[in-house]
Image (cartoon, rainbow, N blue to C red; front, side):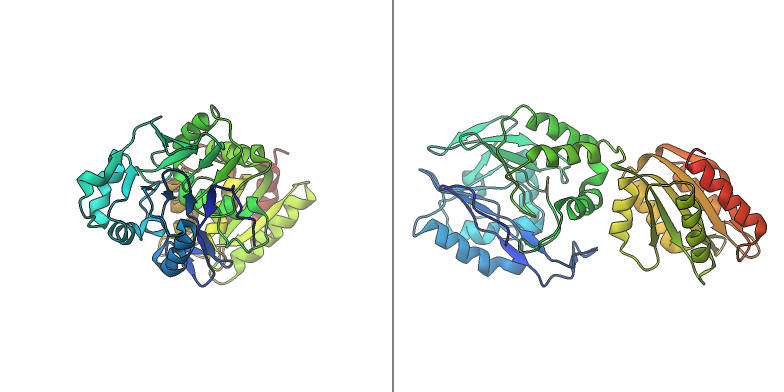
Length: 389
């Protein structure tokens, strides 16, 4: 279990969910997910977000233990997505004197989800930079719109210099999972927040003005050491810069001939000195991981079969996902396959050309059913071009 100790006055009250199959009904989470919630004990008792309905009972037990017979004074609502907000109404009804802290957008959306008794009398609306003293601790609020919903805000606890970062710096995986932070945080970031790099950059600029000793996200481990590493990763990811020198070969093959071709292409690239070549089968592998790798590496080759005078659907889905997440600033090669009327290359190119600062290799490879001497030579040519050789 990851260390959830924060301080004498700030307590972790979240829960792990290791039974969930798909996060947001679309992302594979083989190691589950954590729903994080925090409690600040002071002259005024503060709850930092609720959690998902799947773990309501465990969360309530943790909260009641932290309260130790007292009542909460405030609930800070960082983000209204149901995996963090599901229990707001339950809590508001259980503790009718408790105030709710949010921003204008929070309270615009809140009635769409919940019926809160006496909401107008109970809400406290905060703006950029506003502060609320709760005793020894002072909470300061910073707006983080579209990281990754419009109402998102982060809270800075000024005394202990802790950032409650909402979905920022989050990660897939339960807290008792021993695994590298970068990999699952990267997959989480690009698939959930990736479209909003500009907004993440704006948030990073705000955090840069603060002294930060700890980051408490709504998913994943509490970050206590080497914070510069995590912030650097977010800066790279949100500025759409490649993280590593490498080539992702993403392919969609119907009967295996395109798959055979890209395996040969991978060997050619390695023989020509490519530092890293990663193959992903878009029809079978995890799409979210394919998206992650596309953003991780500085080059990509897409290879697909033609299908119904278009492109094999797994490739179309992949490219549309990339476009929707602002994929940019990469060098790309295209390989198509078709028996009588190859159309995959044209379809892939049309989607790629909508992306910003994408350089498409002049060499486009067309395979007629299976590799022959001519198409194999074109693969060699493409390998050389994408490597700049």
